[in-house]
Amino acid sequence: MGKTYYITTAIYYVNSKPHIGSVSEAISADVIARFKRLTKFDVFFSTGTDEHSQKIEAKAKELGIDTQKFVDDASATWRNIFDRFNISYSRFIRTSDSDHFKVVQEFFKRMYEKGDIYLGKYEGWYCVRDETFLKDSDLVDGKCPYCGGEVQRISEDNYFFRLSKFRDTLLEFYEKNPTFIEPESRYNELLNILKGGLQDISVTRKSFKFGIPVPFDQDHTIYVWFDALINYVTAVGFLENKDMFNKFWPADLHLIGKDITRFHGIVWPAMLLSVGLPLPKKIFAHGFWNIEGAKMSKSLGNIVDPVEFAERFSTLANIPFDFSVDILRYYLSREAVFGLDADFRIESLFRRYNSDLANDYGNLINRTLNMLSKYKNSAVPTASSDPEFINFVSSVLPQFNEAMEKYAFSNALESVWSLIGYLNNYIQVKEPWKLTKETEKLDIVLKTLLEGIAYVSILLQPFMPSVTKFVLDKFGVEKREIEEYKELVHIKTIEVFNPIFPRLEKEKIELVGEANTSDSKESNVGITKITYEDFSKVDLRVAKVLEAERVKNSEKLIKLTLSLGSEQRTIVAGIGKFYSPEELLNKKIIIVANLEERKIMGITSQGMLLAASTSNKEKLTLLTVDTDIEEGAKIS
Ligand code: MSP
Image (cartoon, rainbow, N blue to C red; front, side, top):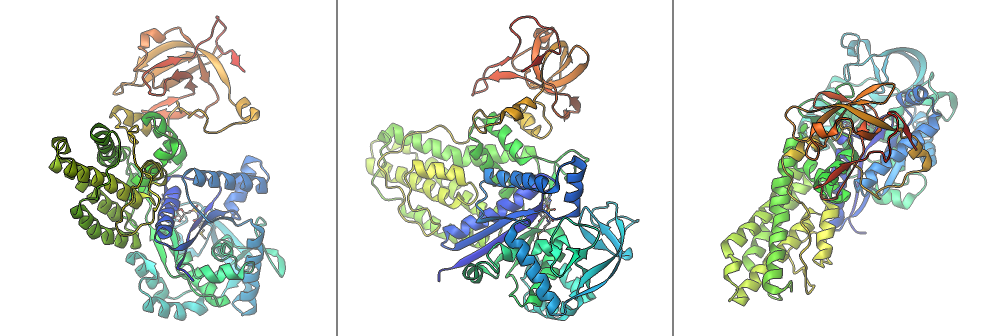
């Protein structure tokens, strides 16, 4: 049997939408999964949604939607976003899947029969936000110690899992396997918990119905965490597909966030010990993403919507959506020391984009193809690459592989950039423009550059699957596995193509930065189709410009005061490069009147105006009405 690799992410609560943090976890797992596939592993990669929680039921009630319908829609949203981020999962598991239902009940039954589950009385607290049982001594100022939220008092008959029974076995296992949990700080944290002793935990709820019932006592619903952890065995066919299960279990890696290590490092292994299944090989707990130095939170309004961000980036840079997804994937992988907290900053993203991607990698491609066109009429030389470069590759590849094995993505990318740096420097040193009369030398230089770009693109595939596919297709590279250097470019010609990463001016930073707070979301024509019903949700109105002024410190933004007849609105729009405030006065323009309010540069914008622009963003014109019509008139 060939080498197999089973990797999982946490499964995501569907009461909120994906944000940069949750998507970054899926991206990291995807990077690992792709790397393993490219190094000849048979990979199973599972991710999905966690749907049976009290907070999800509460959210559906609050919205007045049937709970099952709510989770169906919400789970589809997550899946769709993961698809758009090219998360190459093998299974997108939902805890409402029918095979999972059976597996959870079977687990519960087996544990009960082993005497590891018993009926008792729970007296204590419950934090709905974290879906966690808490003791009096856990509370901090009467609130949840983890999220600082309100807690509920619970007093009900519950089934308990005899977690305490597994403490000694787990402690021994931890001592024998010091890399079971990484990073080390998380391992130490859990080791200390184990040393302090374990208490039995409640694993059912009586007052809550949206979930999987206890198989032999339908009054009780299985606790969401007990249900959720089991997804890892359901996903690879426990009960339903013995061969697949035996092939992939135990998991090679559970990739999770630092906040849920106790469930994964203690509760889950104890559950597995109870039913007699082998423990996962490794649990890696990554850190959290903050935004511009602050914790991500709804109340701060700083949650970055990754799709909206990528859409806006693609419009501003005038590149395909998939490429801007790759830019985010690159940034998230490059910027964090994986395992520690990291900070998402628009400025640093732009710096990385302009310097690493546009300047270093992008420009290397442009320069090379331009020289190939100029000196060789785009014909690929048959010469072999410079042996010095080949030697350099063989010293970098082990560094790259080692970093990838340790999930040190930033270091792995650094080693790829050492190759890119080598090649850019190679152009400077060899000065191909001086070799036009020395064909042999010129051919070696050009071939080395082409092969170098192909090789670098191969290494970058896990991080930037779309961009690298584009480049490798153009270069006619067929064998794309990550391995020792070998000749890659076999096609005859490579034509110059548009820069994959056009440099962005500083002024665009502020506009992309408004991705999650902006009024003027520009969408890409033809990306998705909407139904008539979707369109009819948009309230378009005619509005007259009463006042217009430039927003301080911004070249692009103009603040407009508009009349809709019965009411006035303020809108901030990025049209300052194309209109002066004076020319806007008294114009009758079209706005989307039922958009959520957004803060832009500290001003609340209450809608969005419509404008048409050319794809290179050189020209923009506002939509107005053909003949005069009263303000507030509805457009349909
Ligand atoms: N449903 C549980 C997990 C069950 S796994 C059997 C859950 N869901 S969650 O939606 O709250 O979190 C899912 C994952 O996203 C977790 O690994 C969590 O650590 C991660 N993140 C949530 N916020 C994050 C950041 N700000 N940054 C990075 N990861 C973040 O917990």
